[in-house]
Length: 247
Length: 350
Image (cartoon, rainbow over all chains, first blue to last red; front, side, top):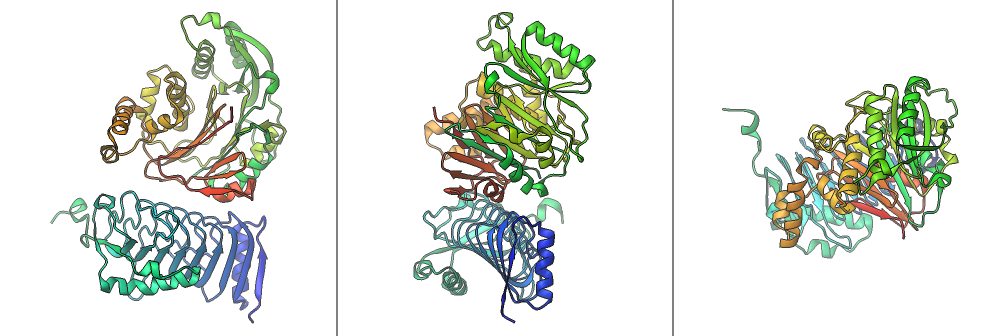
């Protein structure tokens, strides 16, 4: 059963829209295309399985929240927090996305072709083999990876202009790693973050991610591989140990 | 939460209120049905030389008698009427919206360089603080604010905003958090030319309020956004700051950023921070301010609330969500997310 189900979302509230998606998935539909999406929040939230969903239009916030398994491809810009607390699966955004992209993500991958807003990857976390990944093709804004506890954030800065986050990168970071193409000034780092040039070993680890991104969005991979990356990690596992507790 | 959307047509072509109503209700998830409102510029061309005073009356006996009397003392009422409304099943009419077209007598305010504005400001503050059951919520020339407690589409239909044509529209969908929802607490907030819509909270409200009240303004609407309208009037009209510097005072760069600026910028930004420290707004916010000449949108400097801008031909849109803009105009030339604290400005062409 490989027929694509087409849903016209014009004027439909997200509750009936999600009901349609869930009942389609329950009945074995493996591919869904949703047309005329405009502002509907929470699309495919909590959805499990292996369905592939194309979202055409401008979805509202929290796309794919708590999702476990499905692949969502968005043809348009996303609002706030796509991939919020997502557990597994993929969100591929052919466009940009808003603040708190990949908020609290626990597994799977979010790929954004363009830019993301402020606080990308805030409080991402990892456990065992659950390793969430956020890849940004364009630029990210301040407070990237704020309170990050695990996973990987990769900012390629491959748009027309390469603009680094202004300030607060990895504020309160206590796990995981952030890679940003090029050099990052010390002043752009938040409290509890430290930076170093990515080593050969680090670069070998992120190369498959870059190749995957280049393949999905059909961009030239070499210029993104043969360049310097800055790796930002926690300065310590407990950056605020002395703020709230005393020995 | 709260949802905001605004549009300006730089060529001053009129737009009726039907599209912005749909755009605002697209963001109903951002509201709670306890407040919605619209401000439109250019809606009273037949009375463009008069101040359009929109007043909520609790009844038309004592409060209206007192307002009539004070207005006649300070000038001339050219025309007045109840604002036309259509009953809506899910809107409870707790006030009677009334409008006066008023011309102040400038001979009564000698020594002022802007006597008309000063008289109207004084009257707004006086009515709102001393006359029980009357609240002036809109006082500009050729400007109308239409607001109430209800969902965006209900409030729009109540006031029939599709019957009004304006070249600037501001709209707001309220989710009251710190104070209860009531008609006066719905946005936009207006004084003279200035109208403000706001998503977020001004946690520096106490400081800002003490500052603005020391200049004679009075906060009467039990909500933080009101101070923004008065701060705009003080800095923009009385002190003559251009929009860029006004926003710089409200959401200034951090000191470490100022330290890295070139000397002239460093001096200017330090002076603004030192002079207008009490006008600095803290907390999460996204705000759009309108005057007869244009609109300006900005967020707090660490971007704790969303703001999206877009252009299509002569029109500039500023909103909480891109989808709401696309509800008004599907074909946009450009869409972008303004940086924290940086103003997006749309001016009418002169």
